[in-house]
Image 1 (cartoon, rainbow, N blue to C red):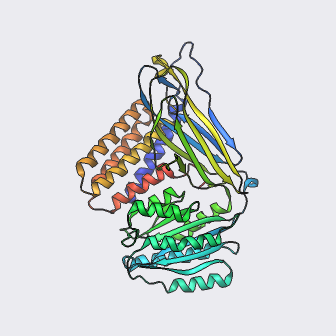
Image 2 (image 1 turned 90 degrees about the horizontal axis):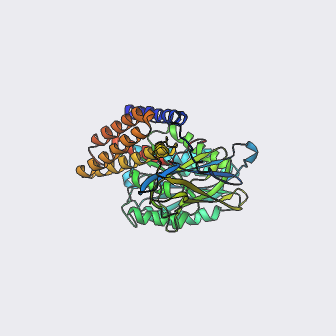
Image 3 (image 1 turned 90 degrees about the vertical axis):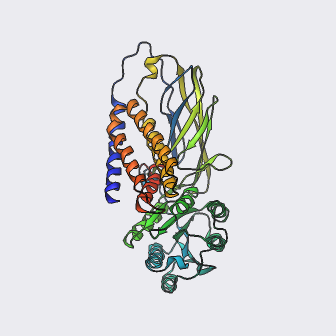
Length: 457
């Protein structure tokens, strides 16, 4: 797994270098070349948004697909930062499936959170097995409260079923009790994700988490080699949080420190974007995110100096001249509780000029291809786990075609894409059973590729 991780990292570094090289490579001179569409940039207070299609020119006589890259960034100026206390709720799994090393990792997580919080923060801990128990009711983290919480954590033992849904319902009032203007709501779930009582299906748990915790950020800590990474990642993804796999206590202190330091320099929360196709264009995929019923996509809260990227695949019909292809809306709440928003439009020029259509693409071509490859590899991993090997191969073949097409479009990226495609194929072929190391690595990589910050985290 370590070798695979290193090779993934090398491949991604090569892709980044290839993107830069492709962008600076001079194109063929074109006589009377029309001006490209203007840059699509919008800003409102703490956040800046820019949208770019992978190509500035599109064919006017046929339909096509194109990646849309939406970059969001927050100011790095320390004067834009404001200390924001945290309203933290930890949901701790102590069911029978957590026996042995797993329950010790869960206790480690609880201890690390308690130690990381300060006197301006609030803390609640809900433990659960067949039934939930409020181990620590929401309270300011004084020295006395910290000592009581640490003592209570020592008594947590693994026994019983896994009723995660009742734990969510028990945690919701504690979250509400600590909620206040100027305080960031953070929910942490430490579990193996193996729900087997109450509402236990993934869709039901996701809906319940939305109902009980919105608009709080929810981050998950997967415990044990057999943890359900699909559920734990989905819970984090829909609530703007981060999914982590905890295999040793050493990583916990840093993980909570990262979470809380981001809250300390928070500049925007409840961040959402909505993408709508124009000129007949339609959305095929928003990589790594599931839009809500109204089309909005929830993003993590933004700390000062943070940059994030959302990648979309569009289906675009034929057209003529300069045209609006997609509208991108941004909505968020600043640290003073003021609702803010911005809107921009991504444009392209339809043409039949072969020289314009052959111009080098933007950075969105490489970013989008990388995201789609990661998503297809993740799908292949799940199919391989289920024994549906023919379907897994079909996903891998589709992924390989994307790698080849991108290598032709951006020649400087060819070696890196070949390496990345090979590593995904090897990773999927090494999956022998659900939850094994190769599968987890591919799924964790998918989360990182499509959801990890570009900078600042």
